[in-house]
Length: 198
Image (cartoon, rainbow, N blue to C red):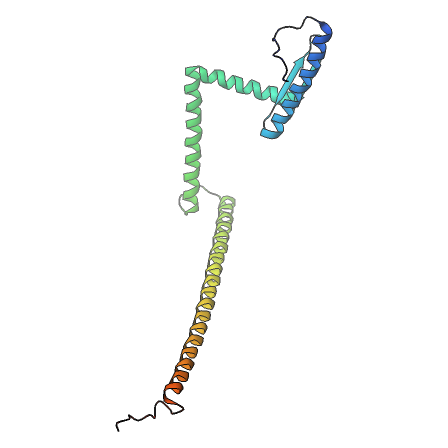
């Protein structure tokens, strides 16, 4: 038989209240731990009893969870404010523009363009970076060629095996033909057989 439905209201009896608090607190702490482990969530739980006793649980540290909460709350309030939201997206756009500019500049340098502002040390770094990239490309090229050679060797072996099998079949058919010829014409050589009317 199932448990009866409990009315959610303050428990008047102090002993019952304390027992319920203890049980539910332990259950809540257990669920918080499970949530953190099962779902890889960052969980923070703070409980003050009616006697001002503190109970806490955190999957990392309570301070870290509170700091993260404060930061998220602040960002949320900023996004609710239209002016702050516009500024936020303007900052994001400026960061992305700068990243794009840096990538384009780096690409031009790798292509050997716009090197006039670089000193010897910067040029040496660029040269080392290009050599590392080239080494990576050559290693990949070697791997691809090796794989292709192995595949061709495998195909060659398969074709050779097919040729051997076909050769055996041809020899077998020739043998069968010779035996049939012997049965039809006797032991005479089929090439020396003369027409019966000659």
